[in-house]
Image 1 (spheres, rainbow, N blue to C red):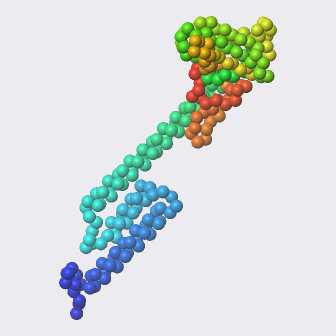
Image 2 (image 1 turned 90 degrees about the horizontal axis):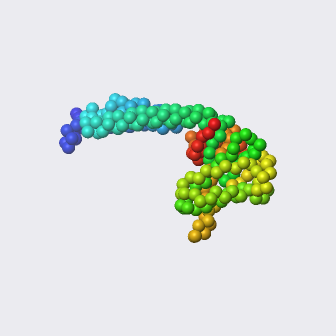
Length: 241
């Protein structure tokens, strides 16, 4: 004699069997999830294994809904696309960093023009020292004051009337008395006088690249300049010989 549930049309034995099947499904999914995930992120392989385990252990009398199954397949497809995209971006990033490293290494021993107010100058060198001043106002008269490492003013260069824009200047390495100075670090302070008063100006000065420092975290490449320390590669305005 069997007992029948009038509300569902299933025998008691069938109800018990379905309940056991549901418990088995939950246990199998939990075990699969634990096995494929562990301490790592849930990837596409783990997602596929969970999906297959769910299909193998689904209740035959209450199978996976078609809409939910299609939604899971769509999620798997999206996960696959995102994984491929991440691999591609990582590859492009690695190639870009390698290209930057090669470009930066080619600057060692060369002269670059950077935004700075300090420069290491060798007055006895055959190469002239050329710098640039950014003039803000038209018809202004920029003046450059050069001081040595002790803070003493050694030379004042009057550039005369200049138009707005970049104005170049040359220093022969001599002081106001015409005496050739020793090599070392010098500070260049540029300003202009107008009717509104005195305005500080930006200077771009040459420097020699001694070495290059590469970032391990993908940050900006740093150029180690002679007598000046490190400066970001993005601050280089011009690359010379």
